[in-house]
Amino acid sequence: MTKTQAVLLLISVLIGFFLGFTSPEPAARSITTHMVGVNGQNGGILVRVRVSMIPGNGKILVNIDNPLFITDTQESLRTAVKAAAEYTGINSNDYDFIFSVEEDNVQIEGPSAGASMAAALVALIENKQIKAHHYATGSITENGSITAVGSILEKAETLSPGEVLIVPAGQKVGTEQIEDCSEKQSNNYYYKECKIKYEPVDVSEKTGVKVIEVNNLAELVQIMLE
Amino acid sequence: MTLKQAGIILATAVLLASFFWLGTNVKDQKIVIPCKPKQPEHKPTITEEETTVIVNGVGLFDNTSNGEIVHIIITSKRGEGRVFADFSTGAYVGTDLQESILLARLVASEYTGELAFDKDYFVTFDSEATEVSGSSGTAGIAAGFVALAEGKRVKQNVAVSGFVYENQTIGEVERIGDKTRVAEKAGMTSMIIPAVQCNKTMMENFTIEVICAHDLSDVIDNLLE
Image (cartoon, rainbow over all chains, first blue to last red; front, side):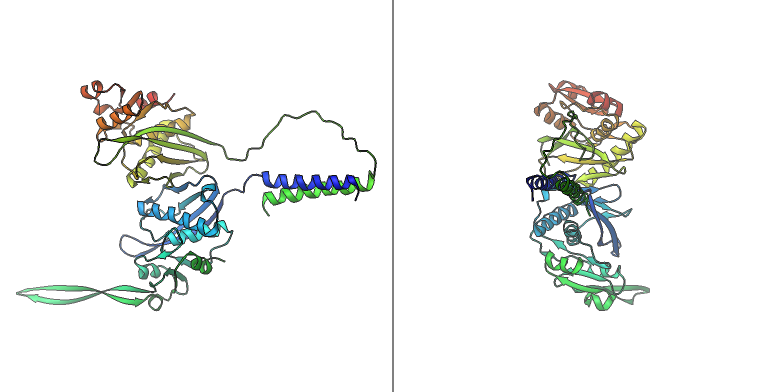
């Protein structure tokens, strides 16, 4: 190799790297996931959420045009970001995280979206996809532990048989509300007396949904992402 | 393939091609590269254009007359007309305040003709409190939206507290005296309050200038430069 060739080769490599490292950051990356929740009538509801991340400084920006967000949900979003950053090793202060709920007339409350939001963030950060027909419910802590939430049976009932619902450990068996009513007579009046019992129920058997328990974000990601 | 990867590959390929061409044709000849006139430096725009205004609202801590100036930071950038609240600060944003932001956007949109639907708006509350809530920031937020739409600046020595109705009149808020005192202690020179709460006590008890706003245009006239 001549001196000229060597110099040009060096220059080409340097310019290539320079262009690579000074190009604009990639545009916003987005992924669609779901919150599995319950509505005011204690029925299940599946809410589509668009999650995006862009270069920024650690903001958690939530579209408030449709739903309003109760403070415990705000807390769970903050925790989800911290857990996903911890899991993937990124500095969350280098990005802004944007959440847009794509449903009208819902009010978002409670911490149960934390796990699914954390999984979506991991998918974004690691450029992975969420498996079709896989949903999650669970609260999340900063160290990635997934903890119990309510209404597992109602949430499973929003899904179709064969779909997958990932739940916190120990929640594969939910509780079912059973109303036991009987007619009674008092003097000349007849009335109905109802007792409500809560009985354990295997959510998978009851709904046909495949229910999988996880302890932490690592296990959730293993099952939910591809 | 990302833009970054394409840039690296393209640049490397072009230069390697010239390297081989020069290597086989020029051999040991001396290469003379003619000088070109220096071009003015032009940096490509790598971030989306965004505009930010900061409005001074006033917040009171629970069950005390103490409070703080809450900096309401509103940013617009290219988007789809959506409104985002920033949940990453120390303070949770109450649902009533989320509703106030949406009402303020609506009122500002009617005041200006319309807010740009090709922009998104981001609202951050810079506060020491654990939660910011209530509707007394509505008038200030609406004025902030107007400032963004009209390209005006917000005076940083003026604080504002007031509700705004859809017909743009300014409605009363709780504990306006305490809020005005907080603004005074914080070094503000003027405090815009609802005209319905302007009375002799309010006008005489403070060293700060108290401005009485009947409607949104009064707020804008006194808050924007």
